[in-house]
Length: 430
Image 1 (tube, rainbow, N blue to C red):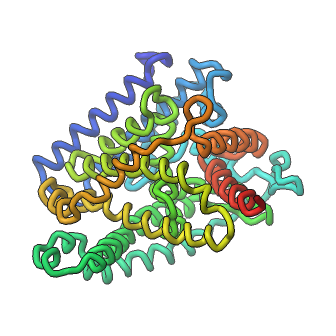
Image 2: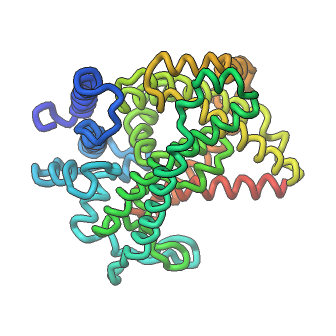
C-alpha cells in the first residue's frame, strides 16, 4: 500500500490478497484434507482479505479520487489519510473478529476504538438526527443476551434436526427411485432449511462477541432505543420469508454482500452481476460445488429480475391477489434457493451433477427460458423497476448524509426496508 501509492494500490492489494488466499485454499483442499469443515487458517484469511481490499479501495477513494467522482456511500467510507502500522494491524487482526468476522469498515472500527460511536442523539420529530451530543454509553447487554439465545437455539437445531435431515440424502439412489416429485421437493426444502442453523449460530455468535466488546452500536431508533446491528451479518426472519432471490441474498451474509458491492459491483464497467458472482465464488474457495452454485445463482438472479419486471405489476391489486403473489413467489424462491445451493453443500462435481440430473436440470432450463423473454426497457436500458429503485437509492443517499450514521451499509439496510414499505403502500393506494 505504501510502496505502490494511492493511485494504483487498490488494484495491487486486490490481486495480491485474493491470489494469496486462493493459493492457501488450494493448499488446504488438495494437499491437507478435501472436504474438511473444521476450523482452519483459510477462514480468518477470508475475513482479512475482505478487510485488506476494502481498506485499499477506501484509501484510494479518499486520497486520490475527487469527491464529485464518488458515490454517496463511497464518500461516507473514504479514508483521508494513510493508517499507521498499528492502526492497520489493529483493524485487520483485532481479536473480536479475527476468527469469523464479520467485516466492518475501517471508519466504523476507528470510530469505535476512539470511543466516539455512542455520541449520537436519537432522531427528532422530523426523522433526522440532531447534532451529535454527549450521552451515556449504551449497554449492549440486552442485545448480547438476545443473540446468545438465538445462538443456543441454532446450535440445538443443528445438533438435532440437521443430523436427521442430511442434504446428501437428496442424491440417495433409493430415494431418487422411489420418492414422488412432491416428496423430493419437500425434502429438498427441509434439508436445506436444516442446514442453515450452523451459519446462523456462527454469524450471530460473532456479532454478539463484537457487541459484548462495545462494537456494533448504530445509533438510536425513533423511540430512542439503542440499535446494535451495525455489523450484523444476517436477518433470519427476512431470510426465511424471502419472496425473491434478491431479498434472500440481501439478508444472508450481509457484510460479505456489501463487500462484493463496494469492491466489484459498483466499480464494474461490464456485466457487474456476472463479475460479482465470479468474485464471490473465487473468494469462497476452490471446491467445484461453489462454482456450480454461483453460476446457477447468477442465472436465477437474472431470471428472477426479469420475471419481477415483466409480471409483478399485474399482481399489485387487489390485496388478495398480492397476497397470492407473495405466497407463490415465496414457494418458488425457497425451492430455487435450495436447488441452487445443493452443490455448495455437496462440494464435489459428481454428486452435484447427480442431483441436478435427477431434477432434469429443470430450474436451469426454466431460468434460461425466462432470460429469453423480452424485458421492457426504459432510459439507459434499465427496466422500470430498476429505474424506480435507482431514484429511491438516491433518496436514501441524501437521507444517509443528513443522518450522519456511522456506516453507509447499515443506513442502506434501513433505506431498503423503507423503500419496500413505501413501494407496497404506494401500490396499494393505486
